[in-house]
Image (cartoon, rainbow, N blue to C red; front, side, top):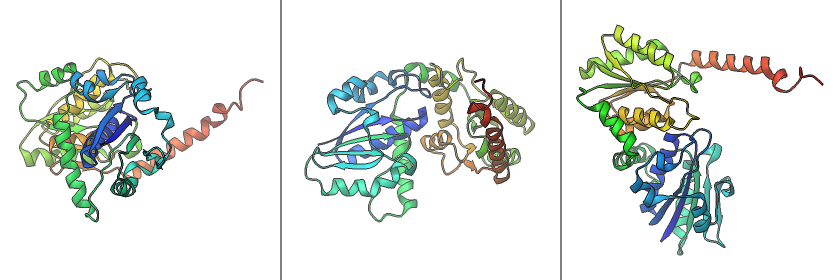
Length: 323
């Protein structure tokens, strides 16, 4: 039997995508799955603050246990795809190319091997070992179905799940709007496109209740006002901690994500993996509306960012510091 050790990277949903991907991959290659979840600046909590105790007991290793069982840390995973035939080890870290780029080669390595392999992955996104010569549109649809099944089975902590159920209690059917302005300002659609999409979705479904999710308070308030103007009934969840670098941020992120998976359909920014995976988990990927970024707005925001960088460059590099 093969073994997989995953070091999930980046934010909560990036890590969740990677975990879903290896959970799907493991039975494909007849492998036992282990996960070494390391806190960092973006995710400052351990796996036991995110997942149920049963899931952690079954799959999660401490860093010390990962070293003992696999003699590996995240920093030792080389870039891209590496096969060490002498130790029967395969390392995968897609970096700028992404893990999906290496899936055909990885499949070949497992197809020719006659001995147990250890696969060690450091990833913060999704990837799928698709059947050979299958059309991309077909395997992507299959991959979404498999991720949906995984997301429906995975359990978060009792605190997260209880908070979700409390919000859903006696709540009528609702639509979802996910806003991503804080770190995706150059990839946001125009306000008019969002308004039009909300009108279309409400008219098509006959639903007026609208859950608004997003980590920017000003944006949530703006779109609460906009939704009221459209004849919708908006609501949000006010969490105690929004700062992604603070302990407790998992409550805000994952409660909102779980609630979005219960929406009957969503409007979201196309570039947001948080929203895409919520649509996949909720089975609304085909009925939701994904909005592309406005090219004009993207160019304007990037221009402002470059200008700000140019203005602050001398100060950031010590040109004006005292000597």
